[in-house]
Image 1 (tube, rainbow, N blue to C red):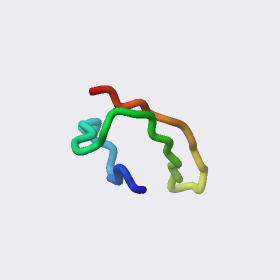
Image 2: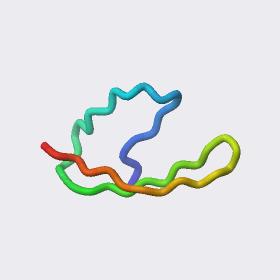
Image 3: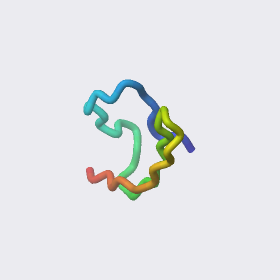
Image 4: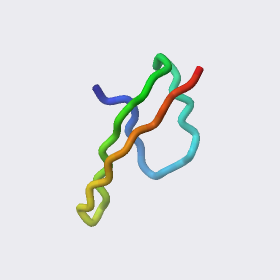
Length: 43
């Protein structure tokens, strides 16, 4: 499930419409590096 997608980075994501919980992400940079991690949404 895609939760958020955007470019360029704007630091304004408020997780509207998502329940509280832990979400895992995969970011692929323009140079092909793959970054993985998690973000916890608290409401």
